[in-house]
Image (tube, rainbow, N blue to C red; front, top):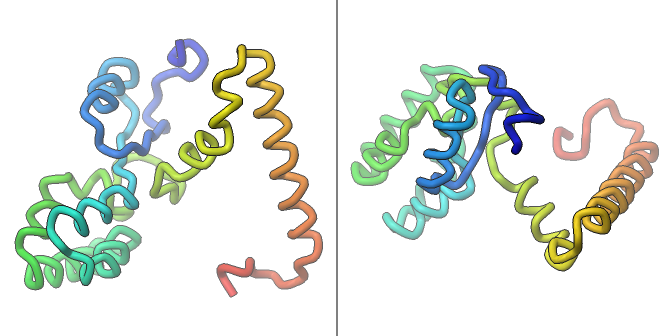
Length: 164
């Protein structure tokens, strides 16, 4: 059981795709933990369900806002452009997807991408027994860290390439 290894705590946060069974399980196993919505899935729903492709940039910007006043201004703009998208975002619970409203410690993790990346990388090893699976995970992480360490050792600027 995961709860034996990772204790329920207010500092714990889970980011998911809003699947009801995940929310219910977290409410039972980790009632103190904060629950967030993956912004990638939220944006996909805006595009698919509300044909809000033109709003994706504004919704993404609102999700990243650090100040409540900036967030409220962007939400007002979203609601003016598309009341149905605004209603959807409010009903999705802004405390779960907006940085400035999130009640827990999200450490700027806004998507389920790390979990999805690992799932994709372990597509065939997932079929292995536990020990070979753990070996595959160790090898993969070792390779990732080695590659990133090599990249960072060649980088001389104080900012990362994304920040530059």
